[in-house]
Length: 160
Image (cartoon, rainbow, N blue to C red; front, side):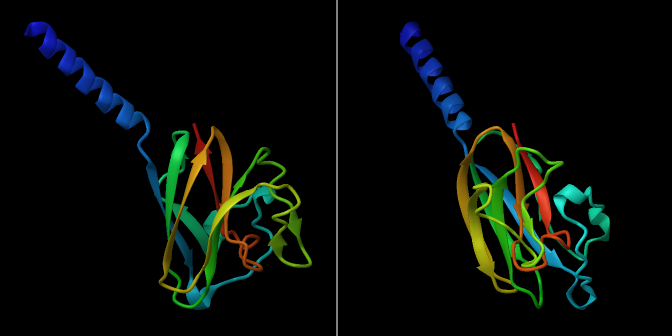
């Protein structure tokens, strides 16, 4: 009987460990702007070594690091007036940033093939979600509505 109990305890412990190892990480993303006080500057791109404290729009994550594996992003557009979206892209070189098209005021999502998923356009107050399996690495999370990325609407997620 003692061996049976020991085996049951070991199996239960193994099941708990394996469930924890495959648990989904949930990251909340707030897509925000300062409403009528928006300054649409064009110098807050990743490669500009931007001081995002001056941005009038942005993305705030509930955590900026996460374990590799299944990650669910729950995004909320907290704007009162603007549509926002949330694009996730690999970022192999933070100093180089993302390929930017100044004539379109947008990131070129096709140039690098870095776009791996997105929560499409959300009207003010709307929410959306996206689940991805992410490997170790650095990811840019940004809004690619014209002018928003260069105005500072981006953040970095490190997957460990």
